Length: 492
Image 1 (tube, rainbow, N blue to C red):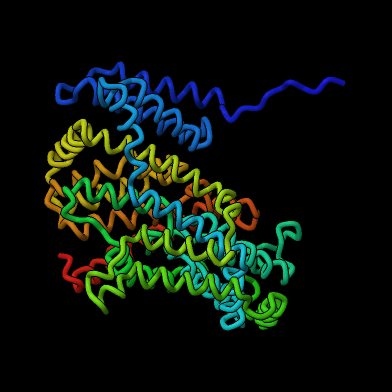
Image 2 (image 1 turned 90 degrees about the horizontal axis):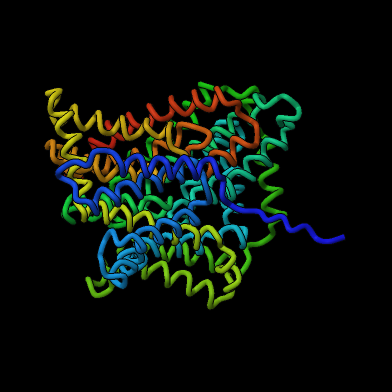
C-alpha cells in the first residue's frame, strides 16, 4: 500500500487568521499624530504577534521566526535591506538572552544526574513526619534549585512534580481512587504555588526575568540596571516570608485528611537509598551549582577586588563548559535541550520588537496616553502605582504566556508609573515581582500549571480560587514586607 502523503503542520488556521486580522485592524485604525508610519506598522505587527502567541497559532519559536521575517522584509526599521535584517537579529547579541539559554542547559544536569530528586527526597526525609512538613519540604526543594533552573516548568513540573506524585501515590491518594483530598490535592497545590514565588526571587529562576531587567533599564534610561545580586537581595526577605506562609495558607484552605505522615520519611529514605551514594556527576553538578551562585553574587569581587568580577552570562558559560569538560553533560545533551534553543529564539524576537517599539516612540506615546487618563482621576503617584500593578497582575487572566504579557504591557506601565512620580526602585521591583506573582492565577498561566493541573488532583474551581487567594497573599507580602525591606536597604 502506498504511504500516506498527509502532512502535519504546527499552524492552527483559525487562531492564525485571527492574529492576522487583529494586526491588520490595528494598522488600519486612525494613526495618532505622535506616532510615525514606521512606528504604527511595528505596533500592528507586534500586536498581531502577541495575538498569535496568546491564541497559540503556532509554537512560540515558529511565531518568532515569522515575526523576525516580517520586521526585516517590511523595512520598518530601515530602508536598507542589510540594516533591516541586522535590526531584526540585533537582540541575539544580548548577554541576558544567552544567560537564560545557557542556564537552562545547565539545569538539565539537575535532572540527568538525579541531584534535583535527591535534594527533594532529602528535605522530605527531614520534614516529612507531617503533611504540612512535606509541603515545606517541597517548597524548600523548589527554592534550593531555583537559582540555576530558569525553566520554571522544568523545575516545578519536571523535578518537583514527580516527587510530589510519588509521595501522594505512596499514601494511595490518586484521582483514580477519588480520594485526592486525602493528601494529594494539598501537595499538588503546594507544588504549584512554590513555583511563582521562587520565580520572583532570582533573575535566573524563570526565563522572562531578564526581559523584565531589560524593560526596566529602558524605562529608566539605564539608571536602574538590576544585577543578579541586586535582584536576589531585594527579593530575598519577601520571598522567604511568602515561602513560609504559602504551605500554611493552603493547609487552611484545603486541609488534607491525613495530618501525620511518618511513613513519608521512611519512603523518602528508601528513595534516597535507591539512589545510592552521591555519584561523581552529582558532586560535580553540586560544585558547579555552588560556583555559579558565588560568582553571580560577586563574592570573588568582594574578596579580591573588581578585577575578579565576571558578567553573569560569562559565569553561565563557564558553568556549562565545566559540565561539558567533565562529561556530566554531553554536547548531545545540550543539543537535545530544546527548551533552551527555543527560548533563545523567541526571547530574541520579542526583545527585538519591544526595543524597536521603544526606539520608534510608540511606548512613549502609549505611556503618555495612559498617564493622561490616570492624571484625570487625580489619584496621585501612590494610587497610580497601585492601579498599574493591579491591572498588570490581574490582566494575566487574559494571557497564556508570561513572556507575551510582560512584552505587551510592562514597558509602558513602568514608564507611566515613573512619570507619575513613583519612587523608582520600589516601583520597578514591585512590577518585577508582579510578573511572577501573576503565575498563580490560572491553570494556563505558565508552563508549569498545565503539567500539575493535568495530574487531576485539583479541579478547576479549586485551582482558580487558590490562585486568586495566593495572589492576594503574595502581593500583600511584597507590598508590606518588601516595602519595609527595600526601605531598610535604602532603595527609597
